[in-house]
Amino acid sequence: MFKLQNQSLGYGNKLVLKDIDLEIKPGEVIALVGESGCGKSTLLSRLRELQANNVAWCPQQMGLVPVLSVFHNIYAGTLDCHSFFYNLRNLVRPKRQELAKVEEIALQLGLQDVLRISVDQLSGGQQQRVNIARAMIQDRPIFLGDEPVSALDGFQGPSIIRSITEKYSTCIFALQDLELALNECQRIIGIANGNIIFDAQIDELSEMQLSSIYKHHPIRTHHRS
Image (cartoon, rainbow, N blue to C red; front, side):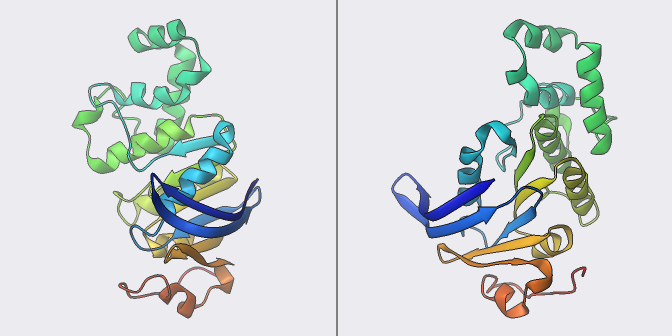
């Protein structure tokens, strides 16, 4: 599904990752982990470019429209599926079938009671769930999320990740929260110093490997088996 061979990645004139070799197969739930600025977002963006038409994309910079309702911000995930006039009609008076699609996703993410509220009235965590919903409404086989639940608490975050992985068999998340990655993903790719330091299934990871990329944080490995 994804394959990188000896690739160097960056933006502008800045090299972020070098000599990257990576293969990802359908059906995997993967976390890209590492400290802030290590290149997780850069790698995730490259993966998105490789499968642009097959990816439901949930960016870290949400780009929601504050004055529009939650419904319209979620519906925006399907804009490229319809004509300009169809989208315009739904801006003014949503069609029943489109409202039903949005309501289904909203219910999964606990947004069903705020659909008619403008996004600027929501909390940061609610806005992040709208961002996720906008991606989830897209009928595509792969979910890519860049810190999708960073504003959610320790209960909501894992619950939302599970909602995503129940809908998408192939998921790749860039996550700062190592414990979340260990508990909710199958495979961990650790990034540091411009390289992939390790790439392993959860049950194959060692504390030494994790410590090699999290030099400033205590490592707790009491994740699920």
